[in-house]
Image 1 (cartoon, rainbow, N blue to C red):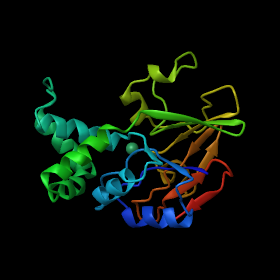
Image 2: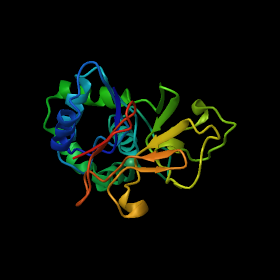
Image 3: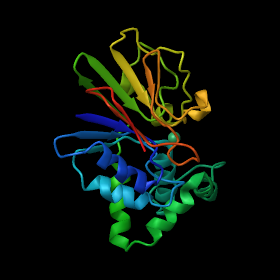
Length: 228
Ligand SMILES: [Mn+2]
C-alpha cells in the first residue's frame, strides 16, 4: 500500500501510533509531505525513525527549508546578502517553532548532528505516483505561480513550500490527477480536522501539533483515511 502523511511537526508519539494503526510494513511506502520538524519537541526522534526506513520518502516543507538555510548560514556554507542577515534568518526559524528542533539537535553528538543535516538535505521538492488509474502529485503546500503549461520541475522550492491553497481551484484539467498537499491546517480552511477533498485537491494537514488537531494518513490504494 502507498500512504501519505504531512506536518508531523515533531509529534513523534502520534507518528509512531499512526504507523501501528496502518500496520506499516516493509511492503508499504509512506510519503511524508514536509514539516516533519519544529513546534513539537520530538523532531529529532521522528527524523531518526524515518531515515532508518528505506520505504519512507520525505518531501521538503517550509520548516525544513528554514532550518537548512539557517543552519547552513551558521556553518558558513551559505552566505546571504543584506538586507537579510544571518541573525534574522536564524531567529525567523526559531520563532517559527525551530527552537525545539535546535534544542534536540544540540543534545546530539557532533556526528549525529551531521546525520540530521544530511538527511534534511535529501528531502525532495515533490513526488508523483500512479496508483491504479489515478496520479497523485505530492508537494508540501501546492503550487505558487501555477500554470498548466509549466512542468513540475519548473517550480522553485519557494513556489512549493509557502503556497496557501484555494480548495476551489482545480490545477489540472485531467480529473484523474490529484494534488496532495499539507502546510495549511484544515481548521484554517473549513474549521475541521479531517482530510479535505475538493476539485482535485487533497489537503491532509489536519493539525497534528495543534490543540484539537489530528495527524492524518491517507492510503492511495483504498483512499481510506486514518487519524490519530
Ligand atoms: Mn508548512
